[in-house]
Length: 70
Image (tube, rainbow, N blue to C red; front, side, top):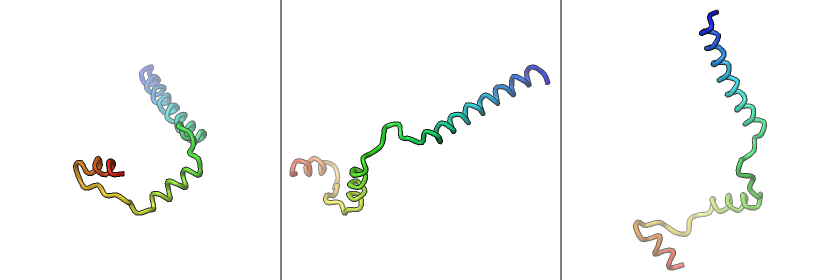
């Protein structure tokens, strides 16, 4: 093997190791960077997402009009 071929192989292996390292770290840590939500909050949000919406967006200005009426 020539020096160029060896250098190419080393670069390729370096990229593969970097990819594998980031993959393993992601799998092992398996945590959200921003933290975890409280279970009560998750239940409340999921419940709210199943409910029928009370208000309807009807176009420009309707959101402000609705907010002022509340």
